Image: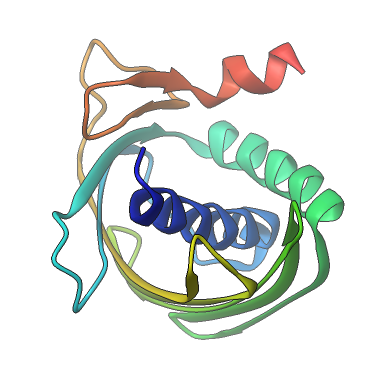
Length: 169
């Protein structure tokens, strides 16, 4: 993984951790297969896509995992929900770098959302002091037969199951 990709992954990790930790306040997502496209506007990089299969239990388990991770990393977590707009902010520590993240998610019912994520790194991580990323997510239908709730398939085809990962800890 090159430095720019790793930087984007760290920003995504921070935003996802914050959202998972505050998931009980987020608008609900329809159970089934979700496609999430991540982009770094203004950068000459390809979009990244993941697919995830969720159900109500998976979301509850992801909430617990997010809380556990956030409590160990973050000194500040805050959120605000105004109808279908969910705003989060956090200050988290990854190794020696403090990440300050702000994200705004606009939900369209329970079948789509768009998130803007802004992260600042102090000291800079891999020479970058900030990262801007967007996520566009949409429900695409029921989970296919080769996926079960908790499965995530990365754009490179790598598949993992969050439920299994949580059970191993």
